[in-house]
Length: 270
Image (cartoon, rainbow, N blue to C red; front, side, top):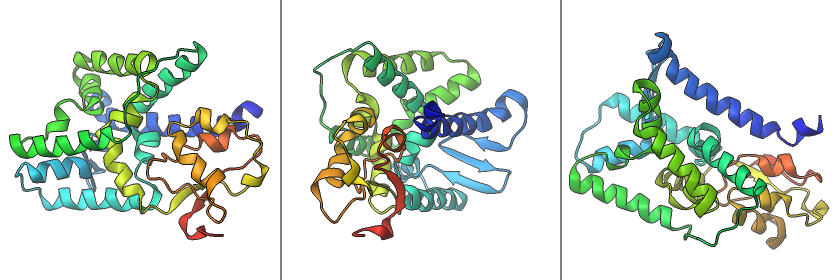
């Protein structure tokens, strides 16, 4: 029971990530088309459209006029992530997160230490560059190298370069930079973090007076810099408001003092 308590949100995330990926693969693998398309654009049961707003933005600056169904699909996604937090995509949907979490786990177990550091603002510069390149080339630039799209194409048509991309990200996080891909380079996470600025669902350090400074939450968090303001700095603000929080729930799992819990933004100041 203790193991389950300290891993419950991790298990829920894995079930969610693999279930979403599995639903996309039912069609190509077994001919059961519950979802048509991929994580870029899809149609659920031939009725509900879903469109990645980041891809739609690149398409717009590239000069392509999207169909109404594409705009509706992007609106649905934006509304969802405005409510639950944009970077929920990173921790609960993106299959590459499984790879980077595995690298982080192995890095800790092997006590691998490296000094390579990247600015956390670098991913926003990369985000801006993908928009500019899309405009200059009239293409959806990021999709040419997007590891999520490459993984999907690899699973459908044969892995090919997707193997190399996934392995490269794993080795990069393992040997070069801790949490380097998701926390410093990926423009998708940067894009969705912009939506997190307005989201309702947050993690609340509501029982922070019980904190014994064990540092477990900082060690397990993929974005540890987001914890300190709510836990230590602001007397009347216990919500983690940083848009870079992924709402992964690992701080809730790991804390023996039950300092953290999910909460709603309306509780600010309470």
